Image 1 (cartoon, rainbow, N blue to C red):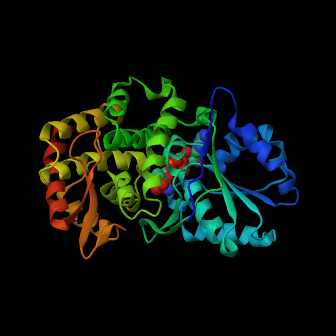
Image 2: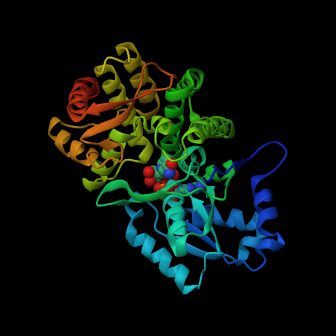
Image 3: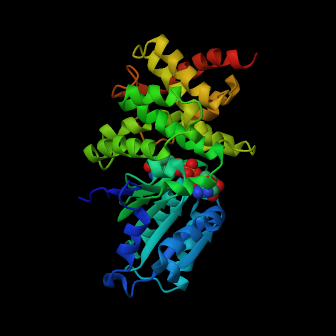
Length: 363
Ligand code: NAD
């Protein structure tokens, strides 16, 4: 059984990119072909920093894809595999993912499947990727508008977290990652949740501390259930409905919401569900809604007529068995959620209850 990579994070006494340099300049990698996957934004903002500080990687072949969730597809994988083949990569090559969650997810998938698997290293450049997506070994792509439909578990050889990359990330993308931090607080640590909610402007906070704390929470959960057969489901809080909202928004052909914005609204909806199932007190639903709205503003708005399509999108969820959803349900803020088998009608009812709650944002 593979184990999780220990992330190397910016600490007081050493530098993660120095650690990476130390690794790649070792004689072991003298003849190794290096590949770095980027999108146009990480090519512009992050690659120069990486190559400045890890000079051995200057010999790497750069593979550039278009940014965005709409490119987390099999077509993009094919382009990357073609580039690898054109450069005669074999499975001794080393593949670096320099980017956000999309790059880490697709790059992990491509490298884990190319010639039955080559080693890969994650160098996350968004808050979402640093605090969440680069950790835990879930890789994959979207298919037929369904999030993460195709994929596999593959652990990165290592993860190098360099928070200064975040300097070029816009506020909307930082806040997208902030949603995952809020989730970590809700499912594991009430003090963390409260401190996050109390923050006036997350852009001015010590993000390194927050990233460290979130990674610790996620790693502890993943270590108990590497292959996502039980405990790890709690990390999905807000995601079953959130993923449906994310796909729905992309299908609407509108300016799509970010992953974190979808998860933020998904957490309010799943808090309603937890209350509907007699678990989470109404008062806690209110606290969760207020905490999320204080940072994200008005949640994503839906109509009654959207519910069947959202249910159809959810019906492809990986946590559905014999027509029932296996979902994390909150009992109280900061406590480990219970994993419960839920009939789809309960989700439909909870979405209808959310419509009532949503009315306060329409006035
Ligand atoms: P993203 O990868 O699309 O990045 C957001 C945007 O920021 C992109 O336009 C990107 O080009 C740009 N960008 C990245 N780094 C930058 C930088 N330093 N400066 C300027 N621009 C930069 O989105 P994301 O929010 O990082 O990740 C969302 C994805 O992660 C979703 O596909 C989600 O499903 C996945 N995810 C996976 C896991 C997992 O466990 N595998 C966990 C959480 C999320």
